[in-house]
Image (cartoon, rainbow, N blue to C red; front, side, top):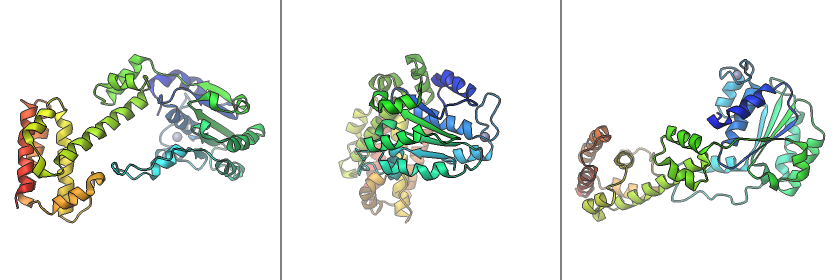
Length: 336
Ligand SMILES: [Zn+2]
């Protein structure tokens, strides 16, 4: 996937697909979509039936590999991606320990030798994507340098970096530098609105107008709101419907109802011997509550939530609606 502000970069590079150097260094600010661009470019290059403009067809076996997350002729060194992939989905209170030193070590570069020396799978081209390239420690960078100095035909290095100046000058000089465009404020704002991020400009400003960072911020803030709300209903005896609805009067009712629906889904699922689906971070609480609920009232409440959800875009008084829901919820869990 490329972003609207990358169109010029994209067309320029595709036009050169027949005469590329053996190493490109894609650089630009963090959060503007460089990595997605690099993947899209690798996909276009490995596509077996590229379109006239050089972009990927989206349908050939190579494109299918990509849509499933990889391709045998693409080797990716990306410590951030590995950390993320290992993090358990939904485990939010027990935050997955983010490795602070996500260095690229020399072993990762040495492993490349086998890949480079293998014959390619399909098109005769092998691509090595390194992101973020500044994460290479000195040994790794030196090992890579040797490879760059003696390029293997049919091999393309795509280095992606947020910090061009943090790379060894010798590496920079062995690569062709491609500055990737940042969006204008208007482009960033329009794109964020398309992603359905409310108050996108607030997050954009916080993220220095890097749209992908802004999405992340909006997401984190949404998670914090969710945790605060669920923490507030975790002990039904302490739920104060009037006070809570008052404090949430300017909240997005659809969002709050969504949280409640998932909460009830998990409660029911646990009660019926099923698995937890949405709130792994509240597992202990949900298990305790699941033993206390009566099925009939919970199913009624679920219907109430569904009904509210259907009118949520034009509620008469969202504070009142929420208050009513919280009363129902409190009684539901309290009933023996
Ligand atoms: Zn294709």
